[in-house]
Length: 168
Image (cartoon, rainbow, N blue to C red; front, side):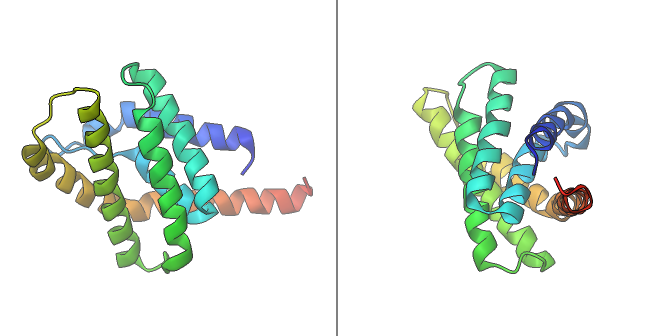
């Protein structure tokens, strides 16, 4: 993917995360579009590209939020990288596998996020958060993953066709 498209997708996911996702909340649970795009990117382009995309999009999220800079970058980089590793082992076109891998990756990413926030001294109620936010968000993200994955697949196919047509 071209660098400007790469950055546009990361910035677009971040804008949608702030502008649209709050309206998709179910109680305290919101989907994590930046994470979903990082996971889809890893599944489509492999671990290195997924890790890079996760790092850049997470860093943009960190800069926007301005506190604990690096936490989103690290967690999204790990998620994108691990999704890229899963790409080699799973048939990601199978809907249930895609949903399950995404849900699991979402839960693991949130647990890593909670661990890092706890290390920074942020007060956490682990069991409560796990039950009311982390697991439901994992399910929500998993259910939305086919839409995001399909969108990213369409973008990849468009980029490939454009590259082939222009020879650039």
